[in-house]
Image (cartoon, rainbow, N blue to C red; front, side, top):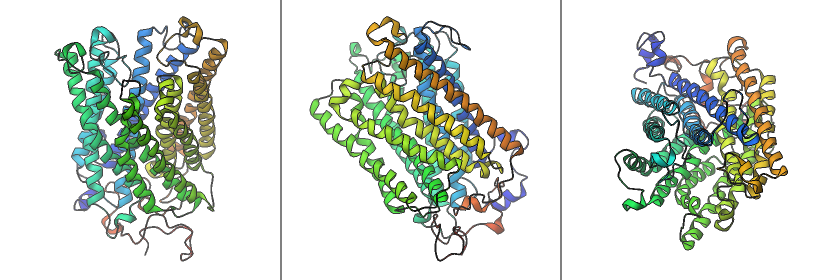
Length: 563
């Protein structure tokens, strides 16, 4: 808070457009992450449109792209997966909302290390530029799948994207460095900058979720960074860490990748669950059921996430005895996840539920993620996984897990905190049109893929005309249904962008606390000023974050800063 008086003067730091390029304000950096992530989502969505058109109508020129070769198909699929996970889910869920929410929800004026925060975004932006460049170099973008398994990824002659694969790898490494720096800020800010009176159990759960996710990322990413450097050496200077002919072991990469890759699911899942908790408590007017239980369960989930990685390697020659061990640990992790969902359902129970747009997104998150969780049990069991491995069943499960996290979770958070970010209310009618126009077609995209996967359709084939057994009329119809559904879902995203612009330009003013919520971010003007609060208005905290419908208080919400 030492710099708060300086913040009030508003005469420090860069001015004009430079304040957006070189700002150290956590809110500006949050917006930078948010808008960059959204732009990357548009690119990733366009890639999905192109390769789904190729799958439904092979050999036909795709409007807006042209003919799709097998080489381009591989590149589109690889970069769609990479972008949606590393350049959409992580920057939006963790970096954008972590930056925006943590200082505001704990009563701080900024991050503890604002310049490191700025550096984090700048490195992330460089990673974006490097990745986009990789799409236009000779040979095109990397096409060796987002998992980058060697020896395919290690040899340009094999993946036919020599420079593209190197740039892809550099972009991923830079992105990881950016998030390491950002995670340091989240953890230290939560530990050191809380408002007077805010004890550990007074911290909103979403802040805990983002910080625990940051710790998971920091603990899991080290081996993969080391692996990425080794893979880069294999690609560029001819080492053989992963080349069997040179004494290397390609399975080593799989261990390094999935030791990070599976905790990564929980890295992005935990913030999304945090958003849902905040929204459900506000729109059910209920205190969160089992605050401490949820916090301890989240920690248990994080610990267990480090013991599940090898279930991705059941077909890689893993010893069956070890496969049994990882089957058990994988199934075990479903227990704390189920517990988190049950706690949210218990919070809803008996509440005065308001079906606003954010609440609809929060409820949809639980419904869709439940399907992803249940179908994950099939893949966690080694016997079933051997059949389903690399089929569209895996792809459908994966999207029923990640779409609720990355897309539904983001829409829930964005529509809920939009009034605080921009000082305007979103159009609720347009919001609900966008909601139904997204959720319904989403199910028509991916439910058919469960059936295709069950019939044995492999997920790495660009043209099923060359595989008559996988191109029966029924399977063709399912592929077509999935593709048309994707087109409908993408079309409804224009409603979202229209709603954002319309609401931002001419929506009704939001006021400080339009949702009548009790956490600290709603005690400052919308949007918050530089420094978040004036010195004379700095909050003190007297209670936990979820005091709703308390019979000891006249109103149905009791803000944390009111005695």
